Length: 361
Image 1 (cartoon, one colour):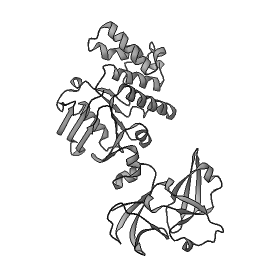
Image 2 (image 1 turned 90 degrees about the vertical axis):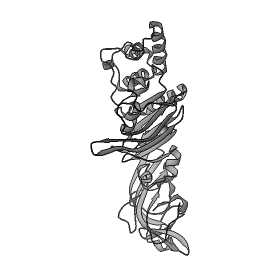
Image 3 (image 1 turned 135 degrees about the vertical axis):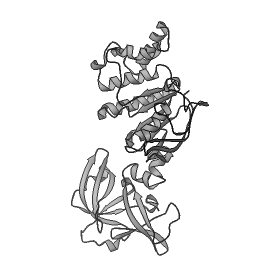
Image 4 (image 1 turned 45 degrees about the vertical axis):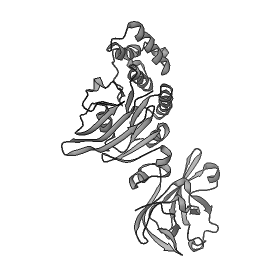
């Protein structure tokens, strides 16, 4: 079983720039936790502080009940894989993995047994004798991962390990990494800027912004119930507008173009206040307007617009719709079979359920 990690009020500044500001985390044994955010948000610095590669200005790091804030990295006994594979070019795949065991003075037979196990785990038994330059990028990353696992670390730290790979290899290794994590019951802290990657492999995701923790939750929680404006804007595709809340027949509505959409606010909102309204592209329903002369007034709670772009994405087709009275198109995702009859230039109505629109003050 992997390690338990506690991070308390961790802070780090470089000159006058605060990179990590009062970050606290609790990671359970066997959990896969991703740090997600844009460049410069502090996610890699947080990982390096946990690893001991940077020294914290304030805060505390505890691994399995042992306070390690000021312990050198080599005594924390952690595994770490970087974006750059950092393999020894003059050593074979076997020898690269064995290196981590030999520096710990393992016996020759134990080294052979453990390396053999790890080569099997990462499906590289036939590549044991190859040098890094003879391996593909995906294979090199597997060797780096096996080397990090060789000493059976209680905590595995991964810093954008797949970002240098092409899409097909990245997807394959992402699945493989998740399988390994579950098989070996590892505790993993994973840094990425790729939302899809974080959503696919994480038990929980820490959304970071400007050195702080913005929100922590499961992938589904973050997608369905983003708690902040930043999370709502950063996680997944969405339609977003600054608008006003008004009461119509006693019910809250927002203006969106020439339409007024009924909403179910996810908190207290004062009529007349300016808010950020957010809804997901797949939440909408579409109807064709025939004839085109049909007026918006007939459906005041729907968006009327013209399809500007139809993008086929396999099972999903995305529509860019220029709605009446709005300068920016809205995105609508439909099951491709349901969108087969739609084409650019067609005038449609877009309806959005009130409870699908989230309101942020």
